[in-house]
Length: 258
Ligand code: 13P
Image 1: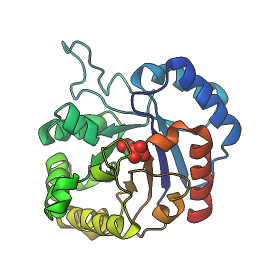
Image 2: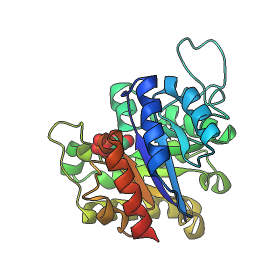
Image 3: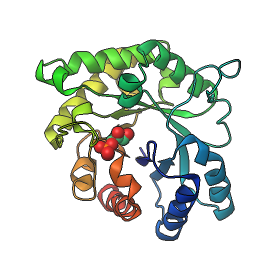
Image 4: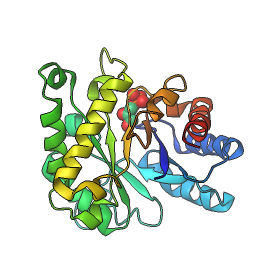
């Protein structure tokens, strides 16, 4: 299985700043076999960065942060995943900021996962419990609900086109009083996610779905996170905005996974 390093820039960097950042990456990153690197800038920067990547013949991929689940129509202000075809290879779906700030429901996410697959874009489905849910011992139930909620209409062939990102909300750097997740915490949740997938799709299929970890990843902990059994990559927020850090994490991934 490939190793995925994905930078989620969230609502940061102008179009010009995004282009300068990408220029830096293009100069410094050498991709290796089996390593997939993607950046998720804001929607307005996707088009120009895709031209920049095409001109440089780079294998760095683009990832959207979100989209609307209908393909086209009277949905003022929205961008569909169909409109993102040819520009991005991936899209984040159901980030906790979308769930909790913008009220996205399991039903929305079920439609988004289906829309992404229908349009040949790989959804990176985010799941993860809040601090409260964790303290009440509800992690397993939350992960189950979020996975089943988003994938219930996806069959075994299509689920192989999905990536899952485990992002405990309490470990995301922008969460108030965020904590650093220990490799043991992550290993337990990744096991739960895989066993959930196994229950729905069977063992073989469950082992083909990449699971990424996200939450306060930086160059100091990336190596430890990447060696957790069952973790196939990282979804990085804050640290991905610092190009030196993002490059360092990519180098660490090359070493750890080679
Ligand atoms: P941080 O790496 O800033 O904790 O963000 C994680 C995240 O939300 C990536 O999607």
